[in-house]
Amino acid sequence: MSFEKASDEQLVRFALDGDEDAFTTLVRRYQRRLTAFLSQLVGDVELARELSQEAFIRAWSALERFDPKYRFSTWLFRIGHNLGIDHLRRRRLKTVALHRTDREGDEVELVVEDTTKDPLGHFENTELAGSLKGAIEELTAEYRELVLLRHFGCLSYQEIAEFKQMPLGTVKNKLFRAHTVLRKALAAFL
Amino acid sequence: MATTCEAIQELLTEHLGETERLSDEERRHVELCPQCCEVAAGESALGLIFARVLPPADPTVEGRVRSAMKTARRRRRVLALLPVAASLLVALLGAVMLGGLPGGSLLALLPVWSSQGWVSLAASMADWNAVFTTAAGATTALLSPGVLAAAILVSLAGIGVIAIAARRWRQVSPWRDIG
Image 1: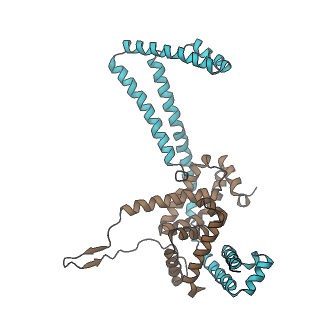
Image 2: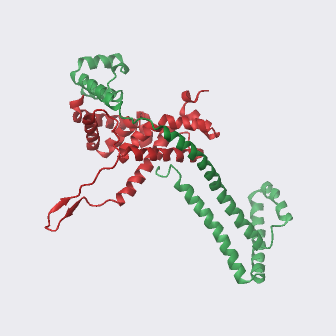
Image 3: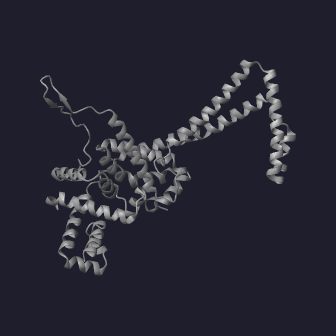
């Protein structure tokens, strides 16, 4: 049986029997999607690659405790999401104020070099990439997360409903509203 | 009509403007309704943008995950053995402190307990309690306070190892934020 055509559930069963190739197939299947989702969450594609790698290792380590009543995709994204949130919490503790007051009492803004790797850096159209990034950032936190799960994580509506523990109808409605905002914000490119 | 439009526009959002995925009736509606037609076109264009958001695959990730899988497997085995080893240590120390393992006659009672049920078990527990009380008294009389304290400390260390292992297990659990 070809692993590439096997379902996630079948691959998990093979992996539980100790088949590392089966799990590697899952890594190949979800790597780009998880990295895309996490890169938007943490704002750095290189960091997102490290976090997704860690998510796969944790998934492998905890595979025996995976509950088959859930989908592998939502479980994996949950692990990745937890890692991303943990990272953001740690990073928040290390922040410094970007506005200081100089000797004359005037407020000066500190210029900080952005060393992060742009998650949409692979876009040829940088103007579109900037607008898309801006439009997503303008969304409310709840809409933004749903958009990231849908279009960067490529999860189905059903998977998102499971991930967010939200009724399917609510997911449909919220994504519809989020898209309405995005269509307006990106009208120049549509 | 507004409800129909909203329902159809929700579907168009879900399918990123692909009208082929709608029913004949819904498709006819889209053709006749300028608002829904505009949403279909907008969603279709949005879909093309979203189709490009995935970053290129990193071929090194697969290899790194694979090598980490082997390490993780070894660590998982050691982690799983820790509570067992700690429990054995505590049980062994307890047995030593009580002057040896329970006698064969007591172990032989096990099948009797299971066949006669909880009442027999309760009676036997009372016997055990008497044995423990006597043994503890004897131990206190025979062992010097220093040795006794050291034995208790080792037992506590065993319990501590169990607690640490259980905590570590909880930390690696991916379901910790659910529920």
